[in-house]
Length: 331
Image (cartoon, rainbow, N blue to C red; front, top):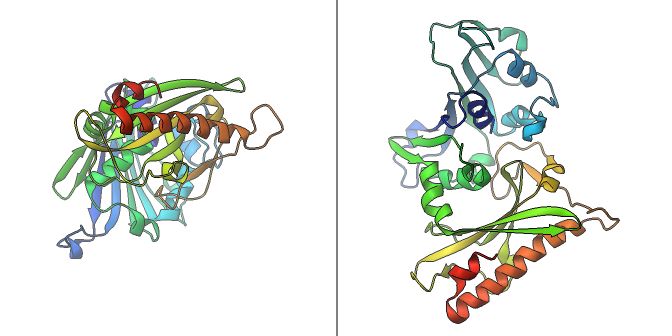
């Protein structure tokens, strides 16, 4: 998300982000892919100028508060990685001289050793290398670049719905996957939207039919500040929903993903000290929200209940008479 915000700040609509996967070289011949050792994220965004660097060095910084930043993200890096190597070329506002800032963020990080000097390279952008993938996060991370791209799209699904979404590309030992293409082909084609109101709060529910072969669980995701935060399996709420569904018109199988978002959820997201968001290690959770009343958790229950009821009705029609594609637009 830092890269996304950086490119939107500097080159909105023309941002480019490359995520490069590094694997254990001695194990590259493994059939399922060698374990991942590091990720390098490169972008053409604003970089670590003085304002961004000061925010980076300030715990609980409110510099990005309006964009959902809580000032804790870089601390969670060291929960999942041994160190972070950063090189950033930037220009201060109103200046033409490029500067470069190079430093390592680890347990002995010294901000005074990360001063900026004039850069020989005029290309503005930042490289962040997350090195030494720790357990249990490494073991829980998907092995293939295709599944990692799927997770990236799912986590930032609301970002990919925006017209100014940057180009995001993943590279893995000669393989190349464009996340925007994954979103277009696997998510957007079967998308629907529904708006509803609960106790004076407005919510939006996006529904997606995902054709990706390796997915099998239907899920409901709560989103805050354009990113997925908490996910629940739909079969925990709807019986007999443990396998993929079939579109009666195309006979293509799919899994269903619902995403709930609201400014109400944005205001109440709580970040936890975990760096890698996997199925068993989420980086953050949504507070069980009271909705203008004394009933703690009522908004959460209603937020979940309405989409699930409509989803269940849609699934019944799907199995009964094949009317699901049209009904899906009313979720």
